Image (cartoon, rainbow, N blue to C red; front, side, top):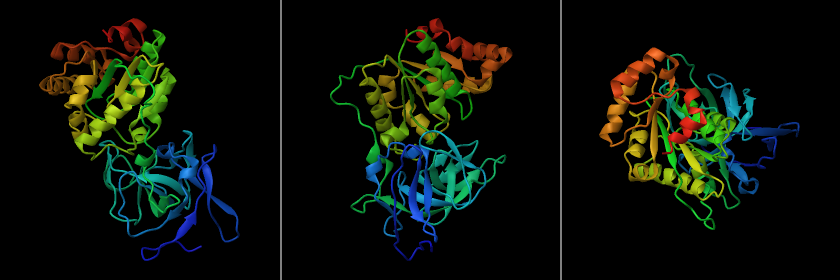
Length: 368
């Protein structure tokens, strides 16, 4: 079967996923069914929403647009996270359903939504398609993919993740529930581990915890860590309709944050929110959110994750300038008693380890 080119518009009928996360998309020359692998970021897309995939040149790719793509060359990402969370091995020729999105990850890739349907990359295993601009020296370039068409509805409209954003339950009363936010110096500073440990400690104390990933790149790893720790409700920015938050305007970042908290606060069984904010205090979207009115009015306590004392000191100074004094330092520096003591001495802020946060008494004290 010939593939679409830039000068053609070609339609492929598509059935949306069942429980096995794999669906008929087209048939091969022998008439046998082929399958598409639906990525993690598509998990809110209902079965009846997608009519078919259509290659079009009259629509410029937008962040969140859903596409069907074929895998060209396997490189950094050898697996894709499916809607159910399973990591599926990728092979050249596999058809995947992903979303366009920008990515900012100093330890991995910088990537942006392309301007057309030319070949690009799978820049995150959760299902983010973009054109990589830079990479960490320890990594290969991302796996290359070829878009085969936009996912469209029965009216021929291109579907975007924002079409499937979750909304607060209007019928339920929304009360203001405590919010503990976890920030950090950078990627891999220990934010997710600290958030999961706090969730475990609060859960051990009998609290029903909502875990929210407010910013970042769509993938399941952090959400699964929250689930393992006992979170009763788990949300991230993809639930607000964004595949990633890199390059989002400040107003959109703040709206996403408010929307996720509203969903959680409308949930009758939730007692407290633990919110992780991705990347570090030098990342613009993080700074925008932390300095916003929404953060100031919603967040009761802040934990700050750092890898060493100097990073902790710089982070505390940046937060102080924003009028925020963290309740504790957490993260990788807690692996070293010497680094922890150095950080406490330099900042005057207590250091709490993973084991400390898992203690019910310590976790509950952070709600005071």
